[in-house]
Image (cartoon, rainbow, N blue to C red; front, side):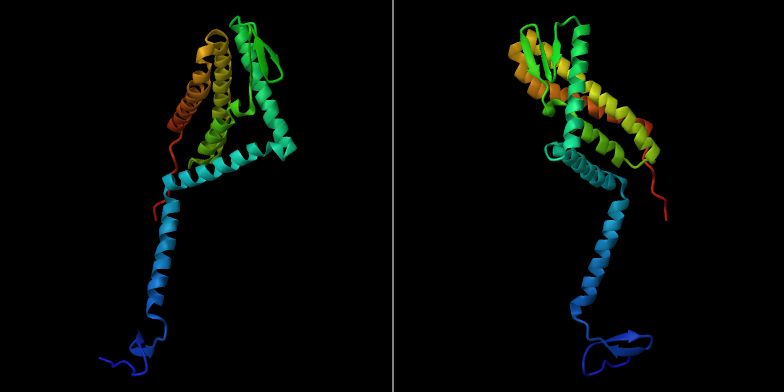
Length: 212
């Protein structure tokens, strides 16, 4: 056995023991940092974790963009035009059902009842959630783009049905309007969005990471 030098701690290099003046906790800290890095890489390779992180980031980004209409004019014009288009489609649907409704901008009026389609009722929350969930899913980008082409029209159609249904309830069952507006309509759009996303998932199995 080779004795350690009297002036401090040492470490072996080959068959020699050389002094080591590093702090005792230095190597432990290095090992913990390396383990943390390996854990982060391993977590990122997990499809479920990557989907959750990317989905949350994309949802936050899209929500920020659509809420920036008051400071970014082009975004505001787009959101207003999309809201007006949904109001127009809801009015057309109601007229097909024999309801005497007329659209005046964002206002649906007729039969002694009128309601305005506010920008908080344009379905953009469900839309951004659907877009984030599709784009974050670990499949090829072509499939993600096809998923957007499937999800976005479905979500908009659900919201148009919600707007038309709320106007019908407001005209024929005004005492139910608040319940339908705050709860039933929202749940209808969310459940329909999740169902449409589930259908898309059944068509798209996630990619498996290559085994090392």
